[in-house]
Amino acid sequence: MATTVRILGIDPGSRKTGYGIIESSGHRNVHVANGCLSLGDGELAPRLLKILRGLSEIIEEYAPEEVAIEETFVNRANAASALVLGQARGAAICAIAGSGVPMAEYAAAQVKVAIAGNGRAEKQQVQHMVKVLLNLQDKLSPDASDALAVALTHAHVRGTRVKTGIALSKAWG
Image 1 (cartoon, one colour):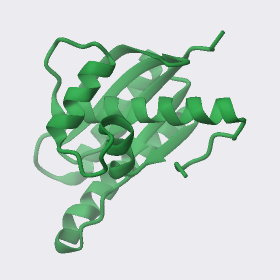
Image 2 (cartoon, helix red, strand yellow):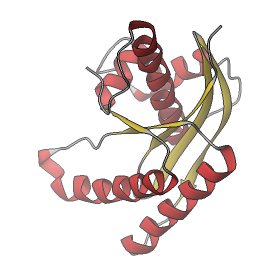
Image 3 (cartoon, rainbow, N blue to C red):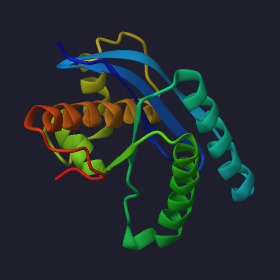
Image 4 (cartoon, rainbow, N blue to C red):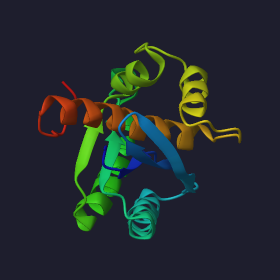
């Protein structure tokens, strides 16, 4: 009998940070919660603090056993945006590190392959597959959908690693 593990997926952003929580047992994944930390505009430092505090509260409330976070996509054409996103991701990682919960990281293309079968899948395709995989009827925000996709990716990778006896590592591959 498969052990159930609670996984928190995070899609970091400097204006909105999505989160999604699932429980995974073997091939079965069940939706627990999802949402979005709306950080607004304005100075970056207070928004980063909201990410740190908000995710710390979510981790405390839902007590995930593992966390998966999306890696920052680096776009040479807009390096400033990538730097800001990296800072938002850093605030999220600090919340995870402060909780002591193990963390895994996945590139956006890895998530798209795991969920939609295509590393260049559109957001709508990923969102549709998340709803199908978790049997969800309600509308999902794009940020929450992406976070649930990260959690589902981790559940899949984790399940494969458990079956093959490979220890859980930071990255897929």
